[in-house]
Length: 193
View 1 (cartoon, helix red, strand yellow):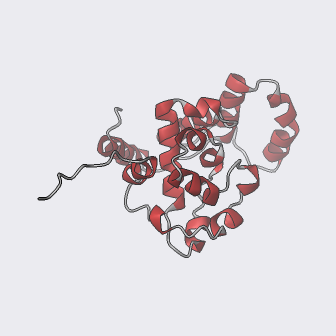
View 2: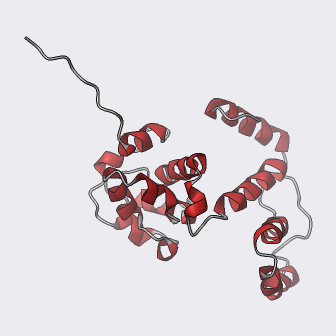
View 3: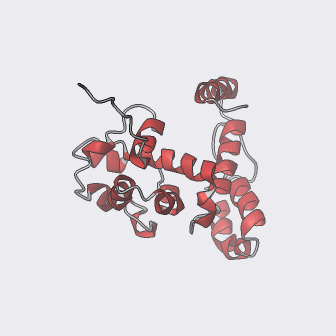
């Protein structure tokens, strides 16, 4: 007589893998630390990617989703290019950001302002096809850290003097095409426009 099979509830690891587009390869992580050693933002993260992945395996959902690590990932893909197991680290970090926003855990992170900053950046890219640093810094700092704007003034003036920053945004050629691509991506991803 065979016993009925019982399906186990998905673990946090299963949820992260399922929510990551493509194949995350997270199960192949050998905890070598190459990702953390490669990361230009690693010193600002409260957990290295390797540690974060071990926490995912251990089911430490709240701790992972409260971590500032995904928010400090600059998506440079250097960790992925060096990973001996081809783990899609940057994609996993994006998944963790989405999960942290969905569950509201990002508010408990030391990078709690990051989603707003990211949203402002995305607004400019969607509108102009590129980042607009003056607008990005102004909108973000007025909303979150108005006094920090004064501290940034010398750097901003230096960049303006050297022609490294524009006072007004400029659209890329073919902005309509980019906006159509982004709209389709949102549609495929299930986001409302």
